[in-house]
Amino acid sequence: MADKNERPIKVMAENRKARFNYAIEDTIEAGIALTGTEVKSIRNGKSTIAESYADSKNGEIWLINATIPEYLQGNRFNHEPKRPRKLLLHRRQINKLMGAVDREGMTLIPLKLYFNERGRAKLQLAIAKGKKLHDKRESEKKRDWSREKGRLMRARG
Image (cartoon, rainbow, N blue to C red):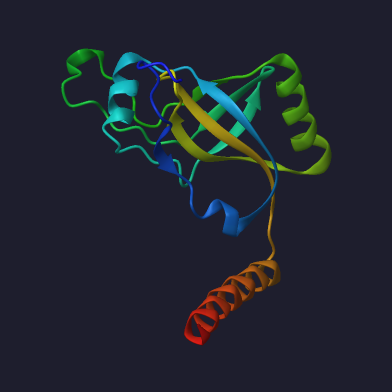
């Protein structure tokens, strides 16, 4: 039986276009180094990760261009909305990600920003390769066909 203190996973921001624009190879869960006002602002549900990406600097992985708006009651201790944020990963995971980006031309794309069962802010990070225009058209055709197939099956009974 689950403890009363455990909470379900709450997704606070999602990058919905990432699966359309990129071919996802692998995903990794990473922690994020945040300040107190950033956590409160994320809990309000106004953060966006749609145009953000992750990059490596000095042997660390950083989340770039993610928008976490200022917390309204934060006064002078507020944070900068688009500052780079450090991702918390094990050394082996960092080496794997940096190798994929350097050797294979992959990109690190955030998929979800959420709070796990323990209330910690986590980021689901994907190792992805950008799709070409014809690949995007193909995935759109598959999606349309599966939608149409579902309609036909329901109409048949």
